Image 1: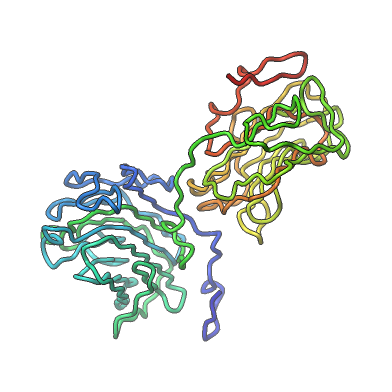
Image 2: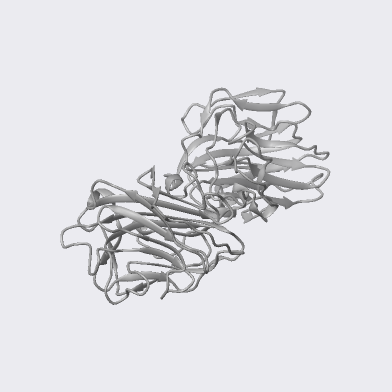
Amino acid sequence: MRITAGVLTPDQFLSARSAGSTVALYRFDRETLEDLSGKGNTLVNEGNATFGVGVDAASGTGIVLDGSSQWLHTQSGLDLTHTKAATIEFDYYSGWPGGWGSGNKIGPLVISDDVDAVNGISIYNPSSAIQAQWRVQSGTWRIDSGSFSDGNGYHEGRYSIDISASPQTALYVDGVKGSLNPGGDNSGTMDNLGSQVLHFGHGPNYVAERYLKGKFCRIAVSDVALAQGDFVLDNLVDPETKRTLAYWNFADPTDKSGNGHTLVESGTSRRNGALDLHGSASAATEDTLDLSGLTQATIECFVLFGETPSSGTIFGMGSGAGSFAVAADAAAGTLSGSFIPYDHLAASNGGSAALAPLAGKTAWHHVALVIDRTSPGADAVRFYVDYERATPAGRAWDAAARMLDGTLSVGSGFTGRIDDLRVSAGALAPEEFIQPAARTETADAFTLIIN
């Protein structure tokens, strides 16, 4: 929420948070220069900087710069031509024995449309302060400062820009908002932020004399002005260890994973070893299936549609934020997988797959919904039918919200059969889903074999 003095025009209104995306994301703690945002902005390593912990193992692995000749940059500009806002974030360790590097103790992280002129965003560190400089084309400088007590240590910087807002910039150092230097201001304007090169480890116009001696751990650039609580690096999560949380082969209602999540069934029956659903029949876990602490989860099963299928949920959990479902739409003849990341939003679809007509299908189909909080954009929710990813349909989110701690429902309003329902921690790949070769088949049913 923002309250502004004056009458704003529509182009000055706050941009919707959902419109923002991560333009570049680097996890040097994973020992890669690849852009993990999926935008393809791989870094160029000038001077062969290496991965390591440097002198500080506590802050983890990063890209270690020697302070004399090493720096990194994107091969081409990050696309910010569609926005008036951006956020740069970094986690780094600097100032270990041997000094900050050559020159005036400056080791910058810069985003600029010209590698030889600061005409964009520049973050650098003189002694015990981080200063963030920014100006628009032909505009005056605006300088924000954030201080810390110890220059020789691990620090987190978050710098957001919105040239249509007031104030236009905000700098956070180690979670504390910095101040605007006396006299610092920015009266200029521009239509968008353009195409900006990201380069760090040295400063523009200082290539031969000023380098950073230190370690960058992670860097992110977004095309929206983020606030505390929304910063990308503060919300990163690591992949989940893959393991089975619950598994039902429907020989009976018990959970074959050994975790005790027994199903309570209402009006159901068995047909050739599968759960047979019709009318108001349904099932749900007797206790809570806690997915709230997971960064990744996969829910999958086999499904056979009835002669006269109705629209209904094959499996799902809850409503509102954190809820998910795989459902059949008899009228449209489709299957869809969805996840709702926030309370005020409709389903953010992982995709939908057309299997029209559903009625009279004699073959079993495999469906899987993968929720992945470690992946940005459209990869945060992925839906598969018969081991093929369905076309995403819906908004792409930087990261999925937390999942639920609730009961898993099975077959609500659905007519047909369900077999081999499995809930796993981790984002499984199609080759890791339950495979047809892992089951034996009699007539139109099968039983999964677990060694």
